Image (cartoon, rainbow over the protein chains, first blue to last red):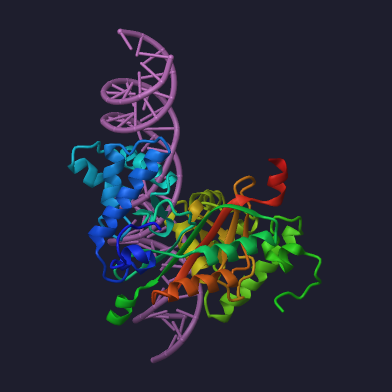
Length: 171
Length: 171
DNA sequence: GGTATGATTGTTATAGTATAACATGTCAAG
DNA sequence: CTTGACATGTTATACTATAACAATCATACC
């Protein structure tokens, strides 16, 4: 079991429910703790910049552009040049702690790091929330399609743009 | 039936087989002809720039960046400023005649325009060929995943990066 | 034909995203 | 305490994309 707490937090227990109300501070702290453990396990370092970038991403369920992140870093005394943000973001992505949302040219924190997953993302164009959806069946279908032509998949991008339940009501 | 010719062209009959040898000039001409028909049907115009951009994309199975396209356009006497390329590319994408490959920040011609399809792409990192794979099952799985949280999908991006059969052998 | 209308293209300028290359600093192993 | 690897800071630049306006072209209508 990935969590040690009770099931009162839909944002943690069912990460695809980022759209639903949940104890966000809680699920953020949870993800951060697991990130720390994962990185230590691999003998890597979650340095101040890297840690702070992850925290910044965890503060919202939205995706942030590299320059948004950079602006916040700079305001806190870190470097204010693009590579500072991009390097930290690249590190987090390589370690599976963050994901790049290509449709938005932006990044979002991984809500369940460590658990093997090729993620699929649901991007609400109303409120800009990005949710990580269960993607195993999607990946399986994609693998099957690729297999027909002998193509071997190494990495994949699966993103859906649309409206979350709340924003459907609003519209 | 989308084609009026016999089944000797894998590139046309099985568009997901872009990796396999096929009569490319033929399937390009085919796609172009159908593009013309589609646009006329909608009362829109396949102007010289638009038509030429589509031809340029059809000349290869690779994805081309907007600036690659622009360079070729400029060399042929069309405008040489970014909007010239982007407007034509946007038009083609809106009409389903071309697709944007987000992983590459690039564009590729649609190999079977007119047939309703939410495309999935297989991108070979060896030879840079981009193939359009059958994506109906993938979309179904994605819809199912989204449905669980009440999310309604409007547009989706499905791309896989990996190695095509030929490049697997080479490696 | 003439002309109003909207669509298309051309052009200028600028915004936004990303990386190469090198200098400096930090930390841990030997 | 030095070496070497990794991390960060910094400069500069490359690449991708769009806003805004001017000029042109095509079409439908009078």
